[in-house]
Image 1: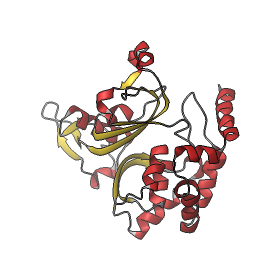
Image 2 (image 1 turned 90 degrees about the horizontal axis):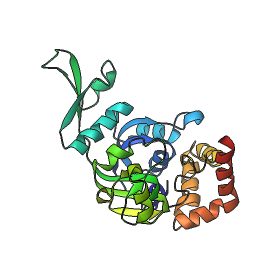
Image 3 (image 1 turned 90 degrees about the vertical axis):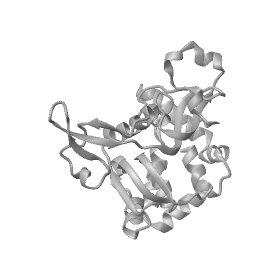
Image 4 (image 1 turned 30 degrees about the vertical axis):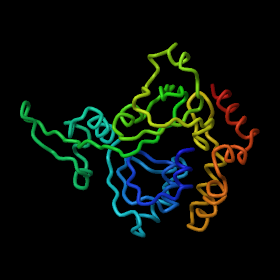
Length: 261
């Protein structure tokens, strides 16, 4: 979220976005920054469908939306990471996504069965938040990694934000946990609570009141603009954002995680 807010702050336009979206992609849509989407899911989970997405698509400002399954887009990143133009898979067969995506259905030359050819997806820039990294970009992730491993290997540039910047010796103590090695990373940003208002596995829980505040604000364009102004444009950086949230509220998120455990 720290990196996402900075992109909004810089007012970058005409983005083609790939991946999965919840609050982070909602902010980009509300800011009118997205031109096309290759995605697996976007929504506000228990709060329902994204109003920002609906407005941007119905207005035509988002020109194209292509749906992939979670497995499908992950295989696209995997193909790019492997340096091959596509991978043959069974995922997405039997769905109507094939009518609108770049995937192709072919007959396997060995078995005669149908296969979907999923094209590689090379990203210009990847944004990933991790639990810890050293100054060189060796990154460790606790728990579910999502698309991180494949996506980090499928982009031309990779910017990583991290809850902690630790000495390299600390990384070396547990080399098996280094999911993203330094040579893939172009920049490392120290961003404690960098997922806020979302959660970070084993560190802090979701800030439900703040997520609900965005859901309420995003019901209208005016509300969305006011939220973006207050929480992004009027704040110069991540430190100012954390100061606005307040240490007491951040501590509650950590305590909430501890109580759940």
